[in-house]
Image (cartoon, rainbow, N blue to C red):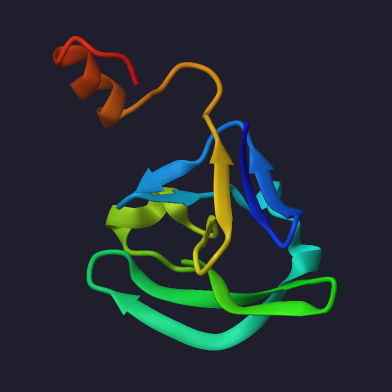
Length: 115
């Protein structure tokens, strides 16, 4: 199980995330939205599109713009649409469950390893 944790609170939990550029993107249904407040911050990734941000709020403490998502990603990033990633002190802990799929597992197989 993979978890995003900040201030001792689990913000998201899932058996699998989508990994893009080293970041774990949590499926929308795995995120505890009661800890997220929409932010006016946006940023532009040349290949993923415009990211929108959330401020994380736990027990009165805030972590501004510590989570982001792509509501309308480019076609290249469509698999992370509305998935939420975390940074800025939010710890991502744990390991994925089950067999790896996709390009990473195929490459690992070609190299004789497991992923």
